Image 1: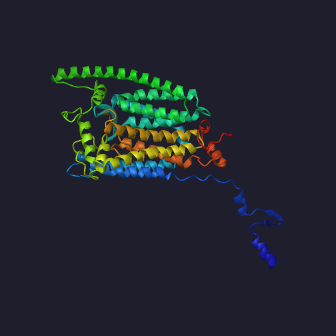
Image 2: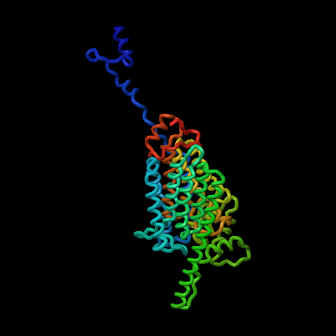
Image 3: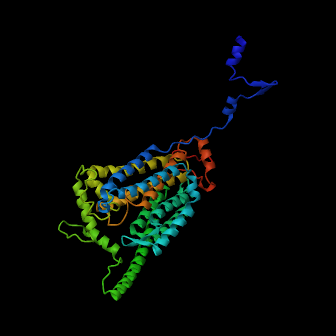
Amino acid sequence: METNNESISQGLTIKETVDGVAVESSRERRQRRPAAVVRQKADTYIWGIYIMLLMVSVIELFSASSAEVSGANVYMPLIRHGIFLVLGLGLVMALQNTHYGYFSRFAWFLALVSLGLLMFSNFFGIEINGAQRAINIAGFTIQPAEIVKLTVVVLLATILGRHQQPRGVSTRGMVEAAVVVIVFGGCLWKNGLTNTILLFGVSLSMFLIGGMKWKKFLLILCVYGICGGILFVIKYQDDKKNEFDSVAKTEQVSGGENDGRADTHKGRISRFLEGVHPNDPIDDFNRQVVFAKISQANGGVLGQGPGNSRESARLPLAFSDYIYSIIVEDTGFVGGVFLLVLYLFLLARAGRIAYRCSRAFPAFLIMGCAVLIVFQALVHMAIVTGLFPVSGQPLPLISKGGTSVLVMSAAIGIMLSVSRFAVTSGNKSEIKQEIKELPEDMQAANFSGQSNDTSR
């Protein structure tokens, strides 16, 4: 009995025999299998920031939509916005479960498709706020400029990741990326000066992240400046011609007058430099700036409370281009600063994940998406507070606008995908597995991070 008990107790370590031939136990076979790579959970900090932005969006958009509320259904603006927020949430959940390597495979295709939509809107699109910038499909309005910004970020991450070297991105990679930005920026120009500047700023940030030397950085900055000046002259002359044709046609038909948009950019910069004074009469040119400042002044330190905004009914585009002023009026200086810190923390968290990525491409990808979201938020806040000339730029994930909400949700989903599938532990077996899952030209190591592996 002692022998049998001993045999039973050692059954987990003694090989079973069949006709005198040793056979491995099932436990031993499991131990001999290569360990599967355990996928991380999506970053909870990014998820938390995203949920908080959605909560702010629901509360403040309802507060800022006084001008849109009809007597029949006061909740209709919120319902319409809520539908896009739910669709955006579904997009985030789908993209976080998609391996980030797939984004590089379709980067060029998506960028070219978005460019095609942008060109179509430039020539055949409908006019919104005085500019031809949208496409109407089955009753839904699509703004391709918002899509282009994200697809270009993904394309830049692909290019820079492919040309990553120990001393930074190669010169060829920088040139290729700069050409892409100039081409897409030139096509974006007609949709708005701010979008082009935003794209230039995001690309320059990604160049610095890639380790570009200051001499090359200043050279590309000069090239951007020259190209921007040329585009401004071309657009100004084109607007002048369109204005002349429009005025001639109007006078021929009715003898009326038409202002046109030839001097829009010049006038905005001029009024920005002159500033707004308390005794200035309110007109169509300074209405947004005046009521935005009044709204922020009403907010004080702690605000009037959500839903108690007094200027939302008078402030044009309070629910989109100027929603930050309503947020400050409702929540005060404290709420405005809290929202700013929330966006900056998203950038900091993305930087932390990017620093720990073992491969270059996911590092570029998550930082590009984060920089796009935060830069757009900063531009929106700068316009509303008077630090930047008036221009239309929605506050990411908060302002009304279906295209903007879906695009920024996609950017969050891509960031979560990187946080889940990119190896940040420094484990060599996991790094090798990650390399196998990436296309051959996307396997460059992240030499600036702490988890890179240069032993390939």
